Length: 285
Image (cartoon, rainbow, N blue to C red; front, side, top):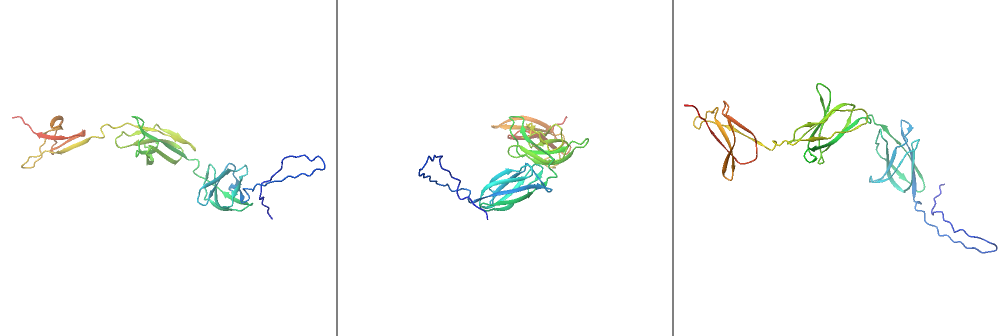
């Protein structure tokens, strides 16, 4: 039969009894707050062997964290004075996979015993490559940049994986085997750039930061079309085409070109603005 301490052990002040005296010593006992609690004891193992240094975590039935402890040299652990009720327990250690939680019930003034079995993580020694993509002007993080990891195998590097940065410019690649690699980053409006080559071996965290230079011509447009005779609709080759910027009704010539044999012309890297196209063709007489 198990016993339950209903009160915390109390004591009187030290007193003297010198002879034929009648001494009265009264005690007021404090209710034991753990009288309605129990203990969780157990072992964390893998392959039948206790694992030291594993962390044991207890949750309530709603997965709210309650308590944790670490295992000793033989994988044993104790979490004392858990209030009576239902819980979940799990354990983790570097190099092992996190198992599903095990439901447990804590009874008053009892030990609840559990064994948690961990499975070795076959990919635990793989590596992580991470970093931030920023601008060179002001070091502003760039979101939605396309980041790619390449295996640096000459003469033909191999694309391993691609991702996009978050709103803080961050990216991460996990489960990368040992080898030689480099990272590239690209974003509309910026020139593509890449990291210096790097080598990774076992269980490394490689921080690869990349800065992108803004492409000042990326916010420009193109203007193209055909020059043809009005009646026959025949394309006019070698026609002169002029591009004018119109500002407050004033026309300023900004570029010229000529049509090709199909009568087509093309202006590139045109800045935002209001324009007019003019064309004619002159021949010697």
